Image (cartoon, rainbow, N blue to C red; front, side, top):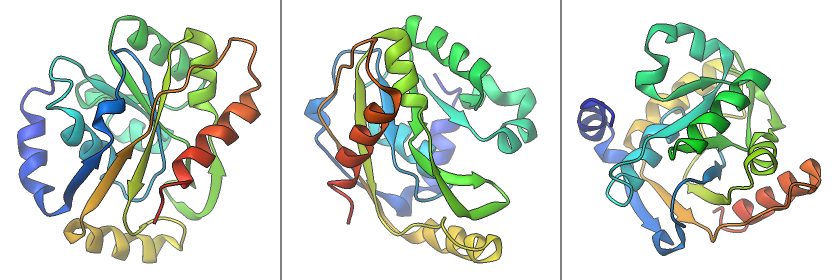
Length: 196
């Protein structure tokens, strides 16, 4: 599904691969994955963690526009969807075709401003659009974000050698009339309940 990229990533990111708990909570695909964001390697680490349990599925991630632009020719190959309202429509199409979509529910405002944190409501919007379940996932480890850009670069390099664990929570199904804000806050509370 990833044209061999998962093998290369698995070798490079081997020191970071930790435990995966709650794998029995995964519902039948498709579904939306909502997770916290600690390092730039989180998307590939999650893919490597879930690949043995979802061998015929690909996880597409909503990605900051700056990063998606850099990798524009290879976006589909890498599973990137530029974060925007149009991107959410594309994400809904991937879900309807049976694939999975991952969304970081909290993260830095931009790649070049890692000190400002904001909440993202994409998971709640997709749940409302598609009626599919949301699976909250807690990434456990030391964060590289939430600091100055230069400190972020140092932390990102250091985190290459620090293990990351994942906790998969039971899926949640929201009604099409659910409040986006309340849904986002609920997902966030579930994720934070297992943070270290």
